[in-house]
Length: 90
Image (cartoon, rainbow, N blue to C red; front, side, top):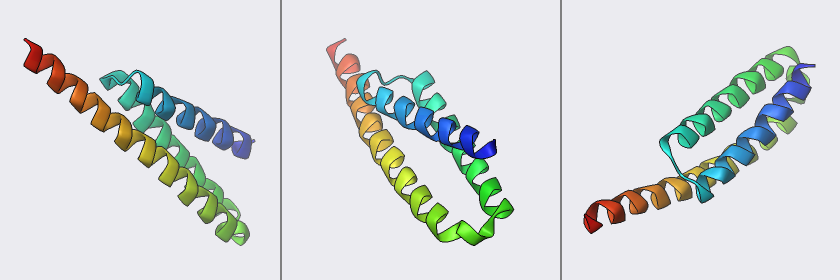
C-alpha cells in the first residue's frame, strides 16, 4: 500500500512542479516543496523496508529529483523575473 501512496505522491509532485512553470506563486512553490519532501520521506521508508531493491529505487529517485529540481529552478527563475518586471513597471 505504501508503494501506491509513494507513486501517487511522486506523480502529484511532478504535476505540481509543472504547474509552477505556468502559474508560479508562493503557494504553488510551497506545495511543490511539500510534495518533494513527502516523496523523499516515503522513499526512504520504502528503502528501509526492502533494502534488496535499493539500486533500482535509488536510480528512480535520482531521476525524479533531477526532474522536479530542474522544473522548480526554471519556475523560480520565471517567478523572480515576473516579480522584477512588475516592480519595475510601477
